[in-house]
Image 1 (tube, helix red, strand yellow):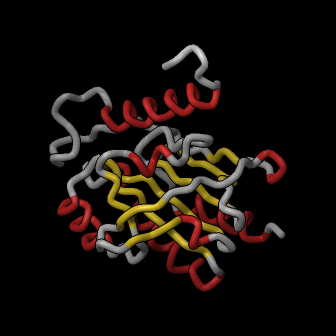
Image 2 (tube, rainbow, N blue to C red; image 1 turned 180 degrees about the vertical axis):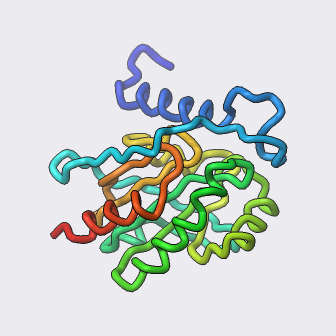
Amino acid sequence: MSPRATPVRVAAAVAALGLLAGCAGTSASGGPDGSGNRFVAGDGNVQKIRPENRKAGPQASGTTLKDEQLKLSDLRGKVTVVNFWASWCAPCRGEAPSLQRVHTEQKPNGVEFVGVNFKDSKANAQAFDRRFGITYPSWFDADGQIGLAFRDIPPDAIPSTLVLDRQGRVAARIIGSTTYSRLTPVVTEVLAER
């Protein structure tokens, strides 16, 4: 990096490395081939960002597991839950039913869900969606480029969940797996914002 690199670029590079390192984990045998649990465990606590402290929303777009184009900007005006996951991640499997349940209950209220399938094979990711009955779209992000769009408030681990407000700004972040009882109040609170 040049001596003139801005602090933002440095922070973005560090965040990207953190996300990549989180997915790589420390186990040499685990990972995208489904043979283990390579992830960085988060504690599942919710970090909320007050509206006056939120930064402009990320500009993410890509191809879903169903080969459809999806832009995060198309969901502006709605509260959006973005979940970073992989089929090889045991905590991701554990939280999948809760995410689907919150999606089903909150969709009529104008809440959208988008998954970001990270460092995975497409076939394994599609099998994961079928197994857990996931009905919301997921980007296929094998190379981690979509995750880089979230550099201001990075996911930092797999799984991670970000809740975006109606302006597309990150309003809350959950590092590690989440539950129905943890995610529902966060979504409801952001939904109630005017």
